[in-house]
Structures are given as C-alpha cells and as structure tokens.
Amino acid sequence: MDVRKLPLSGVTVVSVEQAVAAPYATRQLADLGARVIKVERPGEGDFARRYDTTVHGHSSYFVWINRSKESLTLDLKDPRGRDILHRLLDDADVFVQNLAPGAADRLGLGTDTLTHRYPRLIPCTISGYGTSGPWADRKAYDLLMQCQTGLVSLTGTADESARTGISVADIAAGMYAYSGVLTALYTRATTGTAHPVEVSLFEALAEWMGQPAYYTRYGGSQPPRLGTQHATIAPYGTYRAADGREVLFSIQNEREWAVLCAEFLGRPDLTDDPRFATGSDRVTHREELNAIIAERFARDGSEELLKDLEAMGIACAGVNDVAGFLDHPVLAARDRWREVAVPGATVSALLPPADLAGLSARMDPVPAVGEHTEAILTELGHGPEEIEALRADSVV
Image: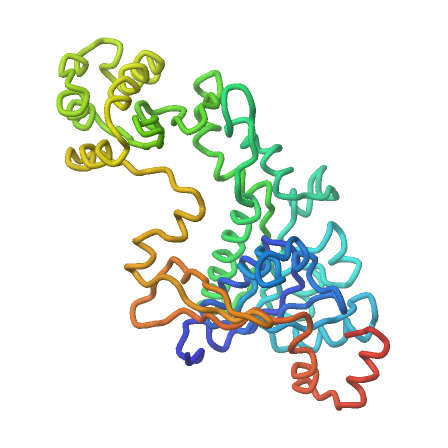
C-alpha cells in the first residue's frame, strides 16, 4: 500500500518504548501512516519480545503491538547513543517514552529539557502513577493498576476476585496516549503550539472505573462480584441451557422485560410483580428472578433458546472461548483479517477497528531487533566503518 496516502504520512514518531502501553499507542500511529522509529536495547531489545514464544517463536504481545515500525538499537547510557537519538529528534514530530520512573530525566530526555531544545516536538510520557505526587517513583505494572483502582475487587465471583483477562490498564493508557498525541498534533497544526502529553496507567484505568466509583460513593456500597451477571442490571448475564452450554442475554428496559415475561417465560404476571416491577427491584430480588429464568433455560438447548430470544428482539449470544472468537462469522464476513509478516513467518492480524472510508490501514511487518539500525544510521550520515565501530562497542 502507499503509506503516503494515509492521514499521518510525513509524521515521524521516535519512541523509547517497552512492554505494552507505549508500543500500543505508537502502533496505532503507525497504522495511520506515521513513521515510527522504535528504539530498543542493543542485543535483547524490548523485553516484551520475550514474554512468550507462541507466535512462530515470537511473543504474542510483541507481534500484536509492534507491526509497521522500524527497529533501531541504541545504548542510551552511552553519549554516542544519546547523540544519535537527538539527531533523530531534530526532525521528529513526536517523542514517546515509558521508561522507568526518573530514567528519562537522568538521560536528559525529560519533558522540560525536550520542549526547550525542540519547540515543535510533542513529548509524550507514559508513567505508572504520574510524574509527580507521592507515588511517582513506584514501579507500575498492569495487574498492580487493576488492584489499586479497585477493578480486581469487581471482577470474579462472590467467593474470589480475579484479574481481568487482558492488560486493560496498559491498553487504557495506550489509547489515551494515542488520542492525546493526535490532539497535540492537531493543536500544533492549527495554533503552532506543541503541547506535551502525559498519561499514567493509574489515571487511565481510574477513568474507566467511573461508573462503579459513582455507584460506590453515592450508593454506600460497591457493586458486588457476580461472575458473568451484571452487578447493577437484572436479568443480564449467563444461564445454563439443557445441553450444558451457557447463553447470555440482557434486558435493558421495561418493554423488553414485558416481552421476556410474556413470550419467553410464559409468565405475563411477572411484569407487574412488585419484586420485579423496576430495574432496581429486579436487582434486589435477583436470586428469585434467576431461579425462574434457570427453570426456563433447563427446558431447551442453547440453539433453541438463542433462536427464541433473537425472534423476540432480546439481545443474546453464546459464550465463546478464544478459538470461537477467532472463527467468528462477523470477522470473516467483514473481511477483517490481514496477513502480516514477522521475522521468518507470517501471521493473521485484525484490521484496526476504526475504518476510514477510502483508505486502507497500514499492516506492515513486525521488525526484528535492530532490523533498521544500519539504514537509519546511514540516513543520518554514518558511514559503514563508523557503524561497524558503534556495533563493536555495543552502542547499537
């Protein structure tokens, strides 16, 4: 595809990134055509490359969030490595980093230093708990954020809490970094001012905790853990059919409740039963309601139940495992899969979820460690002998 036709063509992003949050943000910029130069440690590279080896010997995390990038290895503790980085920043539009607390400042890459030296550069800092405050120096990983924001206390069953099954704090921070950088690029284009961007994992996930936070502060207690049941809407959750499979359905309003009672449960009298008259009443009397629904589910298999619920206009679905998701008919029918190269193989990757009419997403290869080092150094004016000397000293 012609990257020059994409919205961020001509935008250069330099990223000293690792793990998930920052690479997720920059991959989305690359999807839109930005040139993303990923700076990695000489030899080992981003430690996320070694989280697992399940994708043709590569990490599933790394393959997911690092396509369409150029990999440059630099030892930033060496002045020569930092000099190369600064030469890149001379012409860059965005600098993203999610280094350990204090590391960017020690390397002379703090926001104040960069904005003074490069007035047009948009620095983006992704941290754990923010760059100020009493926890600024603490390490922060995804599950720590899930615990500190209270998310873990909402997830699981009544007997046991559980981690959310994806890196939700990293993803939230990456999304806000991505949208923050886009906003800063737009503002620079319209006003000439480059605004630095800062996102913390804690505050990104804190935003996603808005509903349970309001519910707890003003309701006096937090939503209970109920497995696949919705904590504040009923009926909304999974129920086991006669064939042993689980089916999820959701009632969102009184019209749907009346239809469910009359047509599915065969109990129109329940519509005005004071135990179930309102959404709040149904939540209060959830156990009694679930017993009635469970009895109905036990009479039919999952396919018949789904067919009946769909015919009544009730939102419902079977419960997929990951393999079922991969084979989902919607993904196939909407042509959402593309082949992406990884070192030594190819993988199937989903298109970015935001479709721009008339434009095709960029789906270029996932780079090997340092794959583009020589080309980038040559672009900066380094000759073959100089590059070889830098390699010999492990600067690149």
